[in-house]
Image 1 (cartoon, rainbow, N blue to C red):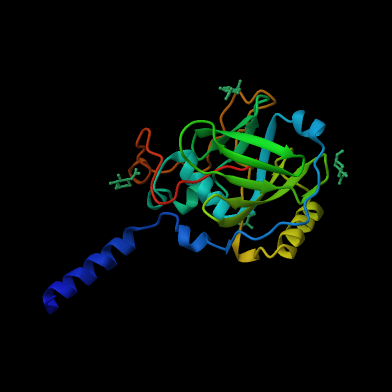
Image 2 (cartoon, protein in one colour; image 1 turned 135 degrees about the vertical axis):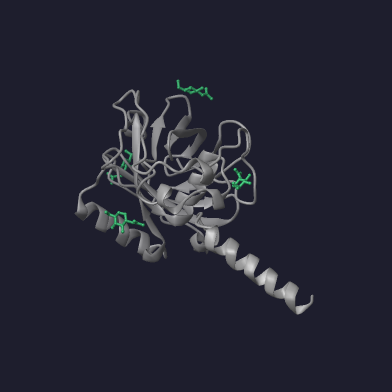
Length: 237
Ligand SMILES: *[C@@H]1O[C@H](CO)[C@@H](O)[C@H](O)[C@H]1NC(C)=O
Ligand SMILES: *[C@@H]1O[C@H](CO)[C@@H](O)[C@H](O)[C@H]1NC(C)=O
Ligand SMILES: *[C@@H]1O[C@H](CO)[C@@H](O)[C@H](O)[C@H]1NC(C)=O
Ligand SMILES: *[C@@H]1O[C@H](CO)[C@@H](O)[C@H](O)[C@H]1NC(C)=O
């Protein structure tokens, strides 16, 4: 490559770089799957009584994979703003072995969850390809939250804490964060969903969660049926 071409190529890379503000999956990569030995059983009668699960905290990988799989977008077309705090991401529990992840500006996707024991379950899209893996219960109070480390089928470790309330008490959150750290998860990869500006439906989930920041159409052009890419993602319990 001659010098002028090299300079042009460098300028093109700088130009593209400057316009990329999508989510960076590499930045979310924390650890490969590791052995989870200290699982605890969750009260399945309680689980069966739940209709809506909020998702107050998770690892960045979990949030990003969910965003990619539920929206069907390429990571570079999903803005950081629309996932961090503003996703209104929550779970609607169906009582037929599936749950539907909702958020990211009115998107949703159904996942099949299979409990083989009350402390471990597999998840995968109810239809087609996408985010799948195994979640382990390692902390729960059997009344407000369930903490699950997640080994994705791509071999990456993630985690999430689902909750029956949009906001857990600070004491509980601190206990959860300490637990996450004790398993080896790092604070720099912690992510949150903040429901303050969300309209999550009641027990029947009639209304959609709406994002506080509506993603701009040009950056989030929806391609129907598109769900592949290097990073197919998503779910949890
Ligand atoms: C949760 O419920 C399960 C099943 O009843 C029980 O074995 C477990 O000890 C309970 N955990 C807590 C923290 O209460
Ligand atoms: C991402 O955005 C670019 C530019 O608008 C577009 O060409 C591409 O098809 C989009 N990808 C997806 C999966 O929507
Ligand atoms: C999300 O909100 C929490 C609580 O308000 C805040 O501490 C955190 O910095 C926010 N994260 C981002 C990425 O904006
Ligand atoms: C499970 O129930 C939901 C809500 O009634 C329904 O939309 C969905 O199609 C069902 N899924 C399966 C796999 O039966």
